[in-house]
Length: 215
Image 1: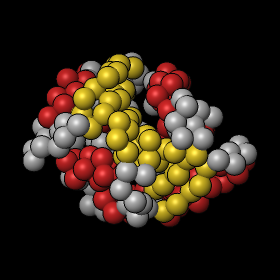
Image 2: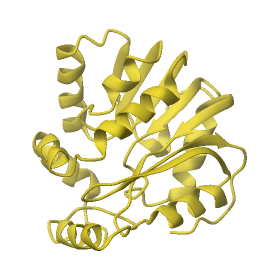
Image 3: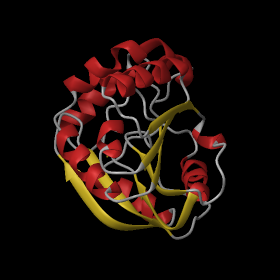
Image 4: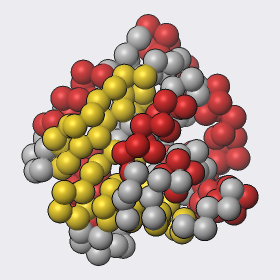
């Protein structure tokens, strides 16, 4: 399923990402509502793989401080423009690799990683990196596209693969939940949101990490 140059794919397609999101966007309003509830009252929130900032506003309106990051410079450019346009004064944008986060241990109350777990090459490594920067009792919020949840999503996912889309795994709601629980996430909320490609909304506390994760 994976493309040959994931970072290059996002650098090239940052300018058309929002249009693609609108095509697949039926689950987004509910996802944004749930993310906003998850971060309500949080002091400091890290958003990884923020992309063009589709989720950033929902976080910023509920949390005190947000650090929004992406590893593609073109995505960060679009993200910064959106943050300025929406007047999100409590958001700082940075280019950062999920696997090499330059933040202190236990420095965030919540980490949000929306629609990225199906893209990461090393899922246990990604979860470990996010766990490191979470403070005691911190929450991980990981809404994730479920490419194999329905017959329609199966077809859409295979069509996306033909464009070079750099996916690494295709989740169902069951396999996503099992993967997260195997990795040590104590899930406190899980919801499957319907759409052309459904989203499995998951949040909880990372209590421990195992060596293997089910794809």
